[in-house]
Length: 122
Image (cartoon, rainbow, N blue to C red; front, top):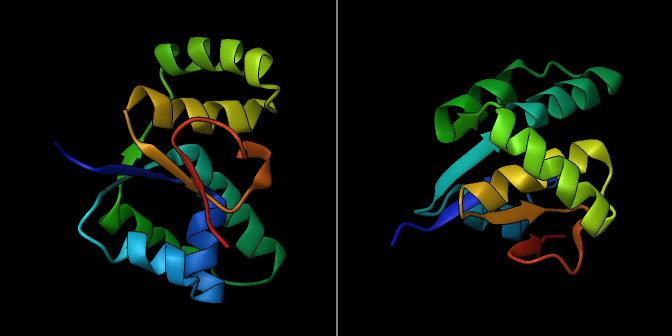
């Protein structure tokens, strides 16, 4: 069985900025990583807001992680999960990416607390 981890933007940023031990274990571990391209948007926006060049981190993510483009299956399931789990639109799309790829969702965002197969890192 392949152990797949779906990285949220907050998890990548925790790895990049804080050197989070938990994020480092996942990113540098023997796991298959996937990342929604929507997380790349969030990461780039955050780094640009902080007046930091996002390219190094974005290039690393593209090299280390498989990128997932939201398709109709993700969009339709996310609409249902947004209502059921009381998630914002972007959060629902990201979480659904994880669910449909049978991956553990790695995040630093407490909005996902209590959801199945979610690991909240510090």
